[in-house]
Picture 1 (cartoon, one colour):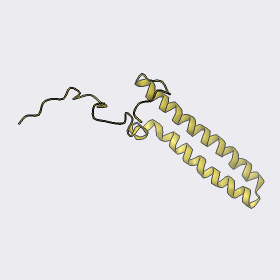
Picture 2 (cartoon, helix red, strand yellow):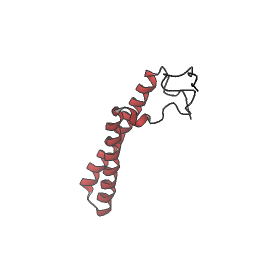
Picture 3 (cartoon, one colour):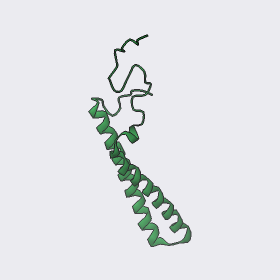
Picture 4 (cartoon, helix red, strand yellow):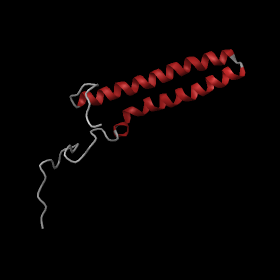
Length: 100
């Protein structure tokens, strides 16, 4: 018995059979990885900042605090810009909701 071809066959993403329009958006293109790495380094810098403050190393605390703000800000900015780029490629605005 032959299966009837679906109207949406060959389209990607398949909106008829998927519930999320961006499943795996964070991993589907490699342009997000620098932002993820910057955020991870920012969290590490936050731990170093708290350790330096706890032990009373004022100079190191300032350096780690500035590094934390810069790394987390750069990482979040990178991820926001990449998310905006993916949305613009689909013809959507940043606040247009699709999927969940």
